[in-house]
Length: 175
Image (cartoon, rainbow, N blue to C red):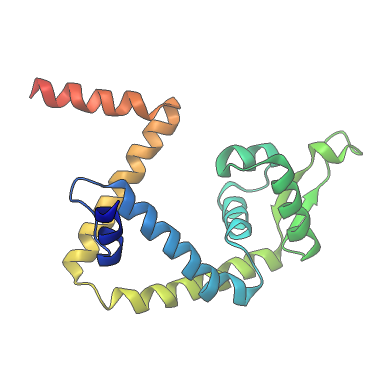
């Protein structure tokens, strides 16, 4: 227990612990981005993810959004309702006409502007941090996260992270 407290105090983690520093950094980045980017623009990180998803995927059903972003139906419904009231998304009529449960949602022009504003603000804040890293560190960091995201994509496509780690150990044993 004492060692864990000392590790946290120093801000370092054991060399073989990849997950803890990533989770720690992700939590801190989310808190910082809420304070510096989303709150001043009257938006939440979750709302931003929904807007970004709709910008990439185009008009989508709540089910498709939920499948990609995760969460609960209730929370997504509330978020979509809030974004709709703010004029950032619009509910497209369902093919059946009157059944609101089967509607799709799309970005409005206002939603697209808000998304660009968030992205510009995020870029500005990110540029402040990038000055503290060398080009080599930035390149290594980007390569690491591209590879990590690719591995996560593979794991999610099977629905099992266990089989990916087993596959890796089999490959290492053969080499």
